[in-house]
Image 1 (cartoon, rainbow over the protein chains, first blue to last red):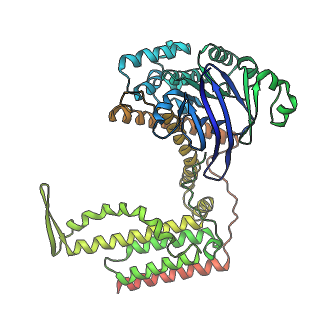
Image 2: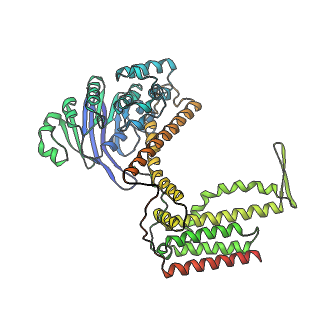
Image 3: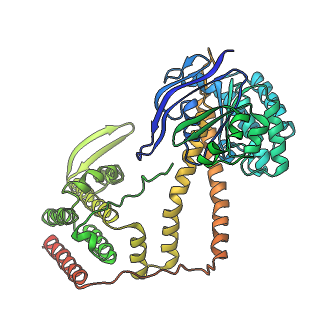
Length: 236
Length: 263
C-alpha cells in the first residue's frame, strides 16, 4: 500500500518553552483510518497542526511522498484537510456556501468547478439543504459537519480531525460516526471518545507527554488496561 | 496559545515598583499635563522634564533607555501635527509646490511642530513607564481610589480582560483560514484582492457577532454571581510616608518645571 502520511522524528517546543513533541514518528497508508488518543496536553493538537505546516518543528513530515517544505506548503494544504476542534474557528463566512467555497476559490478553481465541489462536499456530509443558511445560526452538530465539508471541497487526500465528537448530543454524534465511516478517505482522528475509537478505527496511536507510547491494532490497545490507565485513558 | 503581547508589566524590584499605584498614576498624569501646558520653545523646561523621565527610568531599575526604545512606535502619531508647519502665520522659512498647492513653512510653525513632537514624545514615554511598573489590576484600583467613575474603570478592566480572549479568537480564525489557503497545480492561488478583502470583512463581522454574544454570556454569568452594577474591590493599597513624600516631591518638581518654562 502507498504511504499517505509519514512523520519522522518530529520535535517541537512552543515559544514559552513548553516542549510539546519529543521525537514523534509514524506512518499512515492510503485508506487507513487511524485514531489518535491521549490525555489533554499530550501533544495531539500540536502534532495535527504540523501535518499541514501551520506549525514547523524539527523533523520530517511527508504527505503523499512529498516532503513538507515552505515551497510546497500551498500544495500540501490542499492534500491535508485539517478540521479544527471548534467549528466556530473554521466557519468565518456569513453563509454555508461561502465557507465551503473558500478553499476551492483560494485555489483559483473556475466558478463552475467550485459549485460542483461545494455541492459534492455538502452532499457528502448530508447538508445539501443548508447551502444558503447562515453558519452562525447552526447547531453544533451541523457546524461540525459543515466544517468537515469546508475541507472536503478541497478534495484532500487525508482528513485530519481534532476531537470531532466533543460536545455533540447522542444523535449528532451518531450521524457524525456514520459519516466518518462512509467517507472513503484516509483519516487521522484525535479523540477522547473511546467508544468512537472502538467502533470506527482499526488502528490506534496513543500519545502522552509529546511521544507515541503505543501504536497498534485498536483491539489490542483497548484490551491493555495497564497501558490505558498509565496514560489517563479508560476502556470503553 | 495565549496572546500576552499587550501585557507590558515588567516584574522588577525597585523604588518605583514599591510605590503605591495611586502615586504612579498621579505622577504620570501631572507630568503629561505639565508637558502639555509648557509653552512652545521652553527648551530648558523640556530638558528638565526629560531628565526627570530619565530619573524615573533609573529608579525603576529598568535601564536608562527602557522607555526610549519603546517610545519610537508612538512617534508616527505625532506626525498628525505636521500641518502646523504650514498653518501658523510667521516668517516664511522655505516654500515648495506639491500637486496643486504651494506650501510655506514658517518659523512659528516649525517652533510649534518641534515643541509638539517633544511634548508627545516625553508624555508617551512616561505612560510606557507607568504600565511597565504597575500591574494592570493595580492601575484599575488606583483609578477607582482616585474617584474615576466606576463605569469607566469597569469598562477598562473588561477591555483588558477580554482583549486577550479576542486576540486568541482572531488568532484561531486566522489559523483556520491559513489551513485552507491551498493551491492547485497550475492555477494562480489566493483569489483577487477584492475577494480576500471580502473574506477579511466576513471575519471581522464574525468576530463582532461572537464578541457580542460572548458579552451577553459573560453578563449573565456576572448576574448569576450577584452583580448589581458595580465591582466590589478589596483595597489592599495603603499610602505610606514614602508615598506622600514622593507625591509632594513630584508635584514640587513639576511646578518648578512650569516656572522655568514660563520665565
